[in-house]
Amino acid sequence: MTDKDSQNIDLQEEAGAKFHRGSALSLFKSDRAEDMLALLFALLIALGVYVLIK
Amino acid sequence: MGVIFLAIAFLADSGSMGDIIAVFKNKKYVGEMVGMGYAFGIIGVVIGAWHMWGSHKEGDMDYYLSSIAGAMFILLVAMLVRWYLAPIVAVWSKSMGPVMGNKPLHKVLGLNYVVLGILAGLIIVNVFKIPHWAENGVRLSRLGLKSGVILLGTLYSLAELQSLGKLSVIMVGFFVLGSVGMVLWLGRRRNIPNSMGGVLSAGMGVCGVSATVGAAPVVQAKAVEIAYTIGTILLWGVGMMFLFPVVGHILDLGYIQFGAWAGTGILNSAQVAGAALAYQPDGIETLKVAEIFNITRVLFLPIIVLWLALWYVKHEGEIDGQKVNVGKVIIGKFPLFVLGFILMFALSSTGVFAPAQHYKGKYFDSSNVKAKKMMNDKQIATLTAEAPKVQRADRQAALASLIENRKILTVEQWGVIRGLHNAKVLSKGANKIIKKATKAVRHTAKRIKKFRQWITLLFAFGLTGLGMQITISAMKQAGGQPAVIGGIVGATKAIASLIVIVMFVRETI
Image 1 (spheres, helix red, strand yellow):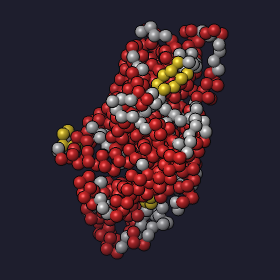
Image 2 (image 1 turned 30 degrees about the horizontal axis):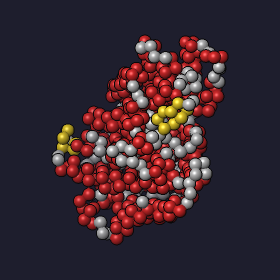
Image 3 (image 1 turned 30 degrees about the vertical axis):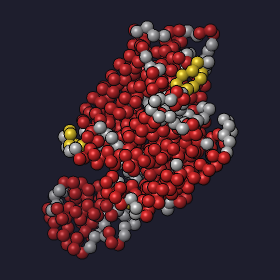
Image 4 (image 1 turned 90 degrees about the vertical axis):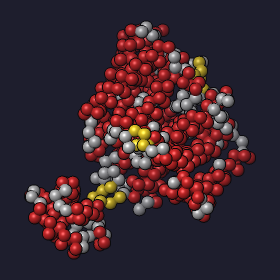
């Protein structure tokens, strides 16, 4: 059956209270950091496609 | 994980899967099984070996790299669903015959690799346990979705964006502002705290969790109110993500209509992408339309934050003398990936990836037509014999130029010849010839094709991971008045936007 740890995968603490972050789980400390990395990753893919595909 | 990927690649490559492919009818995925199987297999084996013997402490680079093992886990689930589960479900469904109109059950219910991937993730997290070593990978799935949205910027042409942009600003502007206003009004009528109403209006109106967290300091929302809002929009969004494609298939909506509806009526970026890909799993035209609407909605975030700040000060005044810097909140919380999308579109518009005038990854180039695609003497003779059937002057001129030059010379002529083809003035054989001529001068942008493959992969990964984040605990957070208000406003927005779209949005841009 459901494992308790599995349900706690998205627990977030803010202002001393805990809540589930739902489907907005992130590995990063802030959404901004995640956005920056997504931008960097997308630019790297774009560069790769530009260089490798003629 | 890596070993399983390698085994699939080896079996597919060596032809040992012949019987399985015959049963599953998944031959079109053999190329993916071999290419992706070997690539991910090697990465998986190397990372897996390192993972077994390495140490992973939070905050270290080691910790972030450990997410790769989890990413492999999501990818394996996503690909098993795409290569085997979705094809076999389609085989079963087709064997039952059509259930509604001419469509089999899996088409009506939208049971394709996107929906099944999300369902697989949902079952894994709620029934089984996500392995401890894979948890960081699950936390990486939103990164995949955001990267996919940024890369989507490369696929739009200026014409598409101008046309869809106008429609999306009108639609989204009306429904976002309308739903924010409706939540605030209902909140006051039902006596929920202003902070709760404020944060729920941002979540229901703009873009799910990001907007909720962004608006929270402006209305001084408590963590428990954020939790209520997240629970409400998650509960609503998950339901709509599965329901929208079913309704879309029943009403037989076009790609633009469905994309516009999903982008307006669904709250969360990931769920918008999920519904759009569920509706059209074998192409990304619907996703492109839906994301334009989604991004337009996010662009409304500063307006909503300002509105909420003014509304909150009017109704509550400044609590404890604390003044919230609205500008700082907007700058600090505005999702940067939206700017990334715009940046990628601007980059693509310069023509670095494909000629700037490309449309759906195809572009017109008359100077580069292969000799075998030029019209031959027999085809010229057929068209010359049929030319008198054409009455309109512009069509006569375009056809004369085509006969003289054996190819279409200008994009204007291309449009006229296409019109002639659609008008079916000529015989079937001649119509076939002019269709070939229109295709000969349209070229596929190879880089755009590659971007489409990357986007599909990133979304398949992100959406399966999304399913692994939808816990029952998170949805249980919803309750009481916020869920009632959220349900009323969400349903009103979904139904009203559907009516507007069916009445006013046509399948042309």
